[in-house]
Image (cartoon, rainbow, N blue to C red):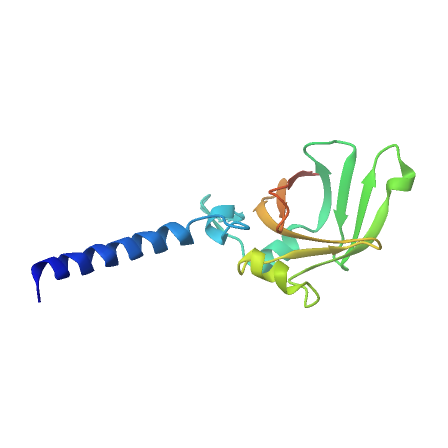
Length: 156
């Protein structure tokens, strides 16, 4: 084989490998599981990716928005959810939440790139999130396919 052909093949393979690595590390329409950092603390203080069961149990409870202290969201163990806005009784809305719903659109599944999806269904709309940070006192969730909008909460 000609030396120039061999060098050309090596260069093409290196470019393909580099392109593949670059592509798989891009956020694209949404972030990959490694980019999001949805984490759970371990007993030795290190962090690791949370399992769907940890996310399911970890979001249960009362949360206050870190960006607007008047907004609260309550995830109940029975799958009900209530959003409240202090001072506006007519702004209270209840619905249903679940992790990895069988009813979520295929496009949401694709954009989530294999990550667990938190589905919230209110009477007037359905919302889909990926939990990007979860701890004992903090919750961060990003809209799937939603221009990078992230909601941050503190446990109350």
